[in-house]
Length: 295
Image (cartoon, rainbow, N blue to C red; front, side, top):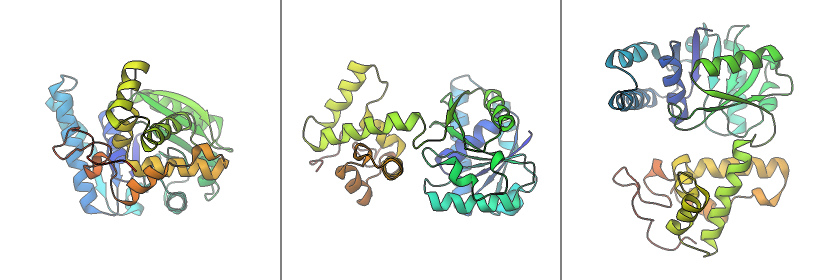
């Protein structure tokens, strides 16, 4: 594999493009929005500069990485010559299925189609293609250039050969791939999201405040970041969407998003990306918890 297409230039998409390009692959970063592509490039440059400051790469490495990334607003042009297409669009089942239908129609017949989904069924996406054996999940962790884990999710018809290829590819990126089966939330979010949801429920019920809950989990459980700050970092809309997928798929009320989480998403308080979540991020860094009661 040499040529990689990444569909979606948001937080995950630009991170995935970054790591592939830094590992020597030619990357086509695709988004219908030219503005999103410009923002993605700026984010990649900022993250590469951060790596230079930490003596992880050189200026020459940065320039080489950027030279391997080409932006496209046309999916047809962007994926026509690629060996692997990684979908990193919004976490919405119908949207992803439509994208996979187009990926299947436009990508070369031997190309592998992957999704960075964090909860949606790989089998469901594979079912709308003519190559279900070549459809697989590559769930990168955020921030992609930093986090080592990649969940490799096998759909019901994903072949052994494709799974082996993608496991090896992830290792070539310097990641640690873990193979899991196709069930709602996979492993990472099936365990993580109920914990985050329970932390929000504890806040909603007045058990303790924002900083108190996060401090207990950091100092008592050894977590590097408290669950409420982590939810802000992931995006409260993303957390709610993942919980909703698991709740609908498994019918278990323990996966139902807390009413507080639902209301915060409806109000547009999404965490770091909106500068307001459980904490205030007006100055770009985590500030004090947002004033007022979380009800």
